Image (cartoon, rainbow, N blue to C red; front, side, top):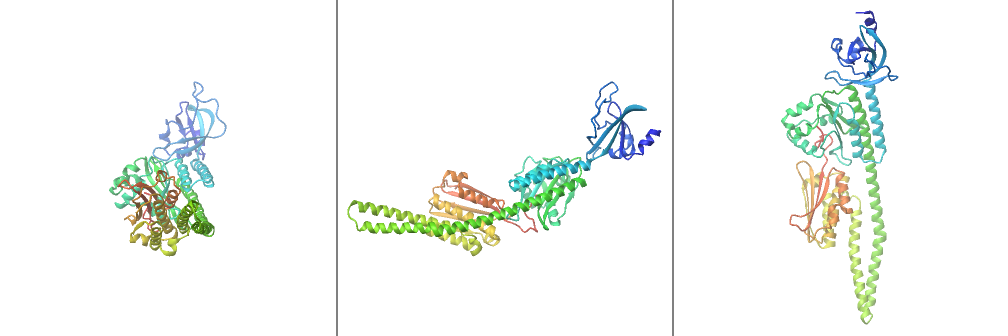
Length: 510
């Protein structure tokens, strides 16, 4: 070994002699360690450092001040970020330039993580919905080197079922849950279940090969093949000892779940958990404010509007009495108008009583869901001269627990019933509530009337918006269609009922 080689070999910083053609001529021991290959294999390999040719010698005459950055790929290992500085041109056996370099991969990842966390914090500070915030987080994670796909899955704001709230990297998102449930029914092992139950990060090298080789995962084979990935990481979202969901990352082929990546994911799930906690708190405050507003409206309607309408009715009856003591055509006209006003007053009073009843908070909480629905049906039959056929699965009455869920179910049915009798003039309205094997509650309200207005069917009606808002809190939906007979209307609500948080039955994860 020559004297200059001995000197450079003793340095802790990587040093490489790079020829005018950009190939490595020699590298010291520290440099070989940074480049993750034996020195003899590096000779002749194209260097990652930028060397701009400016003359016949092939070396740049000038160089940017300070360190520059480049990326080095060593075989199947994760790419490494290198910071390098060009030294003086030398002639040591061969002509070239000495380049000193060091590995700054971890530092670069910390910078990227800090930037991602800052952007995430900014999105949390905005007025965006939880789904928009978690979607932005998934996109930030997706920008990290080595991430092929990202999913953020959390519990519904008011329920215990899981929902896919953020996704990046996948061309399709909608079919994921149905395919996942089909795989689970075939006995597939859901890793997110494990990460949430054990409350710790799960790293599975070679997960893609395992899934594609397992017949239980057959429904998801095509879906997960959208991405070029190998390893899988599931990190639970934790808050005050409870699992709020999970962050799933599909690690790209050629990359590994390095400590830096795992630490970054841990920092991101902390932000995601804060976002979920914040959204849940805001949602609960809004529910509380809405309940209080409903109480106030019910009091105002009862104490003011209902009393005024009652007074109008009394005045109309008095007017009819006066008309009875009058003679001539004017008396007949006065009596006719007074009778019409009396009829209108009766109609308005029926409507107002229904509105006041609907505004009363937590009717099912006081009576129980089934008794509350029976009372609702009887009241509508009495006020509107319509038959209400109520069929409620015994499992529904048993499993719809909690004030929030039972009230939403009650209010969805109440709104659908009132819409039917007000807009469709039916003779019969059938209400059917049943629970399927996956604990999905299906509610059908079907009338034999003339159908609801087109704007209501299209979704512009306030009542339909209210029903959809209530269903969406549980990951559900509401649709309005005409019946198979072509007349009448069907309102169908779908609400996935919560499972206990210890079972995680309805998971949205692999």
